[in-house]
Each structure stands twice: as C-alpha cells, then as structure tokens.
Length: 273
Image (cartoon, rainbow, N blue to C red; front, side):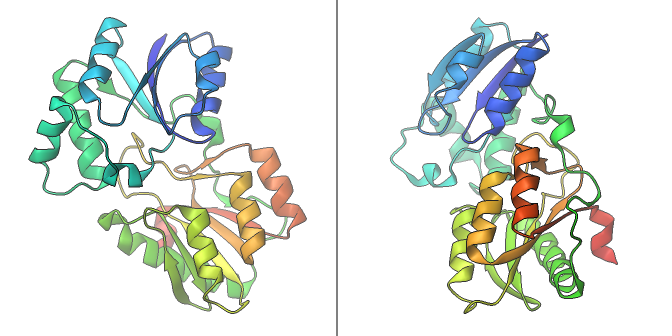
C-alpha cells in the first residue's frame, strides 16, 4: 500500500517508517524542516522537505505522488507557530479563517483543506498499533497508595484541561498540581516542576485529547521520558491506555525498572471513579 507521511520530530516517524518498510509499504515522506530527523530520508521511498508554512507545496507533492492517504507522525514544535515563518497563500488563507491557533484548530483546518483536495488524513498510529500502551500496571512495581492519590487527582486535572489545548501532561505532588505542560514539552515541564517542590516526589500524568480519533497530537513517552523522570524525582507515570505511544518500549521499561519508576495505563472511564 502507498502512504504519505508528514514527519515531525522525535522517534515516532522513524519507527513508523521502519515498520512500513518491513511490511513492504511504499511511503512518501514530507519532512518538516527544523523538526523531522534526517534519518527519514534513508527510510522513505521518496522524501521531500518543506517548511511549516508551505501548505500549498505539501498538497502539490501529495498530488504529484498520487497519495490519497496521509498520516501525521511526530510533533511539530508549537513554538514554530510563533517564529518568523512565512505562510504561503494556502496557509495564510487558512490562518485568517481560524478563531484560534491551537493544535485542534490548526490541524483541523489543514485536514479540511486536504479533504477538499481528495486527500484523507488517516490515524497517525496506523503503522504502530502494537506500541500503544496496554491497560494495567506495565512495570513490576505498582504505584503505592500516595502515588495512586496523586495519579487520580492528576487525571482529573488533565481531563479538565484537555479541551483547552494547553499541553497533555501535568506534574503532581501531594495532591497539588505543580506544573502544567504548555509549549515547552514534557521534559521541560518536569524540570520546572522539580524546581518548585524542594525535593518532594512528583508524579507525571499524560492525558490524551478526548477526541474519538488519533489523527494527530498522540501522546508519546519513551526512554527520554524515564531519564527526565529519574532526574527530577518523578516516581510514577500514568498514561491513557490505547491512546499513548510507548516508543522503544523495552528500553523504556528497563530504565523504569532500574529507577523504581511505576508506569500504569488507565482507561478514560477510570477518571470517573
């Protein structure tokens, strides 16, 4: 099968392309400059580089390659939206039509433009379903009673914030929300939280948007997440089961076990308990 992949940053696009190659799929990659890793060129059937402002060029490439199914994999740095990018006329027209420039509004707008051109935005986890977090305790050590209290509180906070598009993670300590992820990303948020709690343990709760789809902005955790948790005294990680990608899972779990960090996958219904 032939796919188009819009590649952002991190390991997500690399793993998706490696899986596609192993399955024999033809994949045309449109890599976002200053975001996508250079390795995507070696893994793609063909690779094109564009800036974040070149919506028209994206559409032209997909049409030239006769791609009708495209997925977004990897993050595009949110701060890029406030840099000196110059939107082409397609993106400029889209931006001026939006009431807000949060992730949902922007990508939703791009999705509408693509659909008008006969290009369907498909589930970004299509090639990586086995990497979605399972339900239950994923490490040997389950959260203790204090960690569970923080996790449950953090899940309620993350759920309440999910509609405002201000990030996907919260840092909790002693049933208080210490920090909320915004554009800086999870690692920077944890480091900021650690500077505020005077050595008290933190818990990391990553929530997913309450959408029915996984077309974009899927939460991701991996070995670097665990390294940052260990550095910042964060003892437990809670994620949405079936809606969070765990990249390089074996290494991630090995690091978590060594650091005595507990990882749990929870369903959305469990927030109501």
